[in-house]
Length: 439
Ligand SMILES: Cc1cc2nc3c(=O)[nH]c(=O)nc-3n(C[C@H](O)[C@H](O)[C@H](O)COP(=O)(O)OP(=O)(O)OC[C@H]3O[C@@H](n4cnc5c(N)ncnc54)[C@H](O)[C@@H]3O)c2cc1C
Image (cartoon, rainbow, N blue to C red; front, side, top):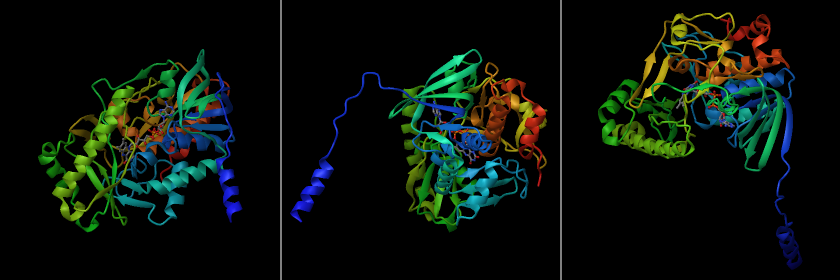
C-alpha cells in the first residue's frame, strides 16, 4: 500500500520546465472559406460551405459555438414562418435540420402558432448540443476564443487574418471570407466602410432564465406591460415594456425586460454588461413582488451573455430600405425573405413595433451582403446593409440563417474571382427554397 501511494505521488508531481520563446511561432491554417462568427448566420454559412466540399474554418471569440442563439439565451426562432397562425416556412437548409433533429427530442422545441405568426421556442442547451455535433460531423475546423487582431488586405481581397487566442496567435489564409460577427468586425478591421445607427444607439437586452415559475398563474402580456409601464420607475427599470415568456412544460421563463446600450468601446461595453445584469436583477424583483403567484419563488438560473441587436454593419453594394421592406420589393438577386415586423429598439423605454399583413413578404437582396469595396468577402446575419429600421426586421434568426447560406453560395460561385460577378441565375437556383418555396 505504502509503495502504491509513493508511486501515485511521484506520477502526479512530474512536470516539465518550459520557457516562452521570445517570438513564438504563429500557428497557421489554410482554408477555402473562413467564417468569422458562429451565431445563426455563421453556423449556416459554415455548414453550407462544408456541405459543398469547401475546406471551412469557423472562428469565434467566445469559448463556445452558437453566438447569441445559444449563449445569449434568445429562446425563440423568429421570422422563420410567414404571417398568420399556420404560415409556411420561409427558410430551409439549416433550419430544416434544426427543426427535424430538435423536434425528436423531448421538450426541445415548441411551436407557438399565434394569430400574428408562428415562432418556435427552443431549448438552448439542446441547440448547443446540436451545434457541436453537427459542426463536428461536417468536418469544419473550429477555432474558438479567437478575436480578430490583424487583417491583411491586398487590393479588394482579404488574404489572411491573424487572430489572438488565449493560447497564442493563429493566422488563417483563405480564399473567401464571411463576416458573421454581428458587428461587421472583419470588414471594419479590413478598413472598409461600415455604418452605425445615425440617431443614437439601438438597445440590447440582458436575457435571464428564471426557474421555479408557477406556469398556471402566468400573467397576460397586457397585464405585465401595464404594470411595468406604471411601476418601472419605482424599480429603477429603464424599459417600460417587455416580457417574461414561460417556456411551456419546463417551469422556467425567459425574461426579456431590460434595455442596455451595447457600445463598441471596450471599457464602455464592459461597464454596460454589468449595468445589464443589475437591471435584470431589478426586473426579477419587480416580477416577484408584482406577480407573486407566478414569480414569487422565481430564481435566476442563468444570465445570458449580453444580447446585442444592432451596432455596426457593412456598407453594401445595395442598402435594404424601410420602403423596400414595407413594399415587399422582390429584388432580382433576392436571397432571403421574412415577414417579421419592424422591431427597432431605438429608445430606452420601449421599441417600435410595426406588423405586416398576413400575405406580406419582404426580401433581402444579395447586394446587401456584399461590401462594395471587397471581392472575396460577404456579410451575413445582423451586419448586412439595411437602414436601421429595415435591419430590425431582417436581423431575427430565420433570415440570418438564409443570409448565411447565401453568403456561402456567393463565395462558392466566385471561386478566386469576385462575388460581384457571379452567375446570379445559378445563385437563384441554389437559394430557391429560401426565396420561393411556399409548402
Ligand atoms: C435580447 C434579444 C432578443 C432577441 N430575440 C429574438 C428572438 O426571439 N428570435 C429571433 O429569431 N431573434 C431574436 N433576436 C435577434 C437575434 O438573436 C440576433 O439578431 C441573431 O441571433 C444574430 O445572429 P448572427 O449570427 O448575425 O450574430 P450573433 O449571434 O451575434 O453571432 C456573432 C458571433 O460573432 C462573434 N464575434 C463578434 N466579433 C468577433 C471578433 N472580433 N472576432 C471573432 N468573433 C467575433 C461573437 O462572439 C458571436 O458569437 C434577439 C436579439 C436580442 C439581442
